[in-house]
Structures are given as structure tokens and as C-alpha cells.
Image (cartoon, rainbow, N blue to C red; front, side, top):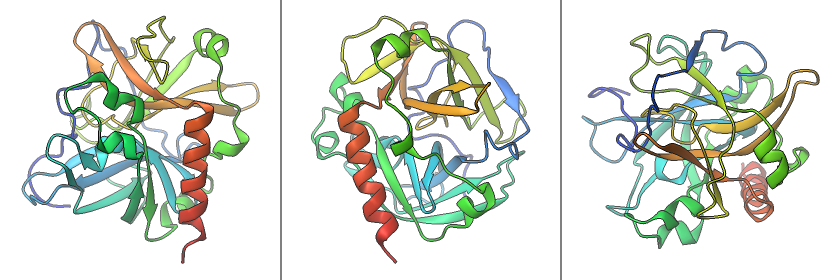
Length: 255
């Protein structure tokens, strides 16, 4: 996509907390990182392009944040967008056009200035082709991942991996951070952490990884941050998981 510098739709929402502890991961061909994708999109102004993050959850479906494709403040949806995988130094190994998306109805009626929006800030994207998944050779299968309960969520080390628009390298590269969930429970449908993020990482998967088995459990998708305090994710609860799985099945069944 051409136009001005890429930036995320939520340019002021993600935060670095203290020292930036993220690392740049150039090994995007590793099986662990292959399904994580950069989402390039705009809302009608070709001079202003945006970037977000998501993860492949089917041959032609991506799990991400709703605000990557729909602006609550203006009621506008993306007019064009592409999902790219294997992104390193701004170059991608494969890409596909976004042709549709689904998000919760309650997100559309949320207050753009309120906390309620984050409890419904998730979406599934439908891609025109399976080229990204073919390159990735896999996708994360949500129906095979048990939902993390409160005890497991607090105990496990969490990883957040995404593509900030302004990176340490000066180009679009995968940045990875780790940390623990905090005891911040103002809303049971979100959870918080002090993992550093910046614009472009909205929709990034927040997940627990067992290095002994290679298994991944998605805890949620990153949606927002608060200066000097914490960042938050929409939590993958059982109801959210069931809704997301129904959207995936619907999209994947289409020609």
C-alpha cells in the first residue's frame, strides 16, 4: 500500500512502560512465528495507511482487534486492507487481501471514550486467498486450545508478538515481549500486563507457550494501553472463543 508512513489505528493507545524490554525477532520463518501477521489497511484516505497485527486461525481467517477494521469514533470501516506474513524489514513472504470481517455487535454500540469497548474489541478477518497460510504451513487452531482460567492466566508467562509501526530497526519487524498478567479486574472480559507495546501491535496475540511441547494457548488479543501503568487485552473467554469459532467456520466454508 502506498501513501504516508504506516501507523496503527490506535496511535496513542499502546504504551511503553518504563524501559522498552521488547526484542526484535528476525526469525519469522520459525514455526512459532509464521502465523503471526501484519495487517496493512486504510479507512478511505490513501495518504494515511495504518498497520496492526493478527494471527492466522484458519486457511483464510485471521484473529485480531476490532478497532483494526472499524473506527468507533467515526463509525467508519476499512476500505482496503492486506494481511502479510513472514514480514522482515518491511518485506513480506506472502500476502492476501481482506474481503470481509466479523466483529461483535456490542462493539459497534460501545462508547468510543469508555472502557466497555475493550470487552468487545475482537474480530475475525476473511481473506481472499490462502497464500499467507500456505506460506506459514500452519495456523493456530483455537478449538484445540483450552481457554486459560484465572489461575492459569495469572501463573503463566505471557508472550505478546506484533509489528509496531515505529520499531527499533526503523522498519516493520516482529517485536516480542513477555510478562505476567496483573490482578487488574475492572472488567472480567479483559486482563492487563506490563508488557511493552507501541502503535501497530493492536490485535497482537497474547499467549502462553510451553517450550517443552511447543503448544500455544491464546489468552487474548492486545487492544489498548495506559501511560506508565499497564496494557490490556481482550480476553479469550469461552463465550468469545465460541463466537470466534463460529465466524471462522462461516468464513472458511465460503468459496
